[in-house]
Length: 111
Image (cartoon, rainbow, N blue to C red; front, side, top):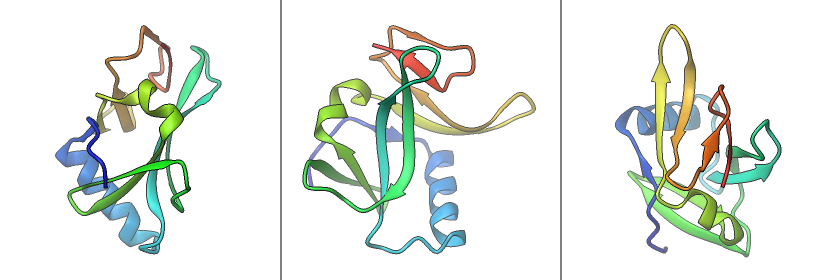
């Protein structure tokens, strides 16, 4: 496992663990973090469960195994991932210091 500067807030950890339990995610699947082209600002975030791949950086936060493609590390390294429950939005929120701009919905960014 490697060191990487990505943080999960306590509310994000709680929600991820709930999803793993409620969806019966097998231990062989990791939380996949990353980015993909698209969205109104250029990139959108990936947060899903997937099997680790050869080119992945593997790390663990609070007993959550996480996989991140090495080629995407520069786009989200240093990010803090939170889970919000509110009247105006519910879901995972990325606070990304690498984003030069974000869209109004907060699900895409440019770097």
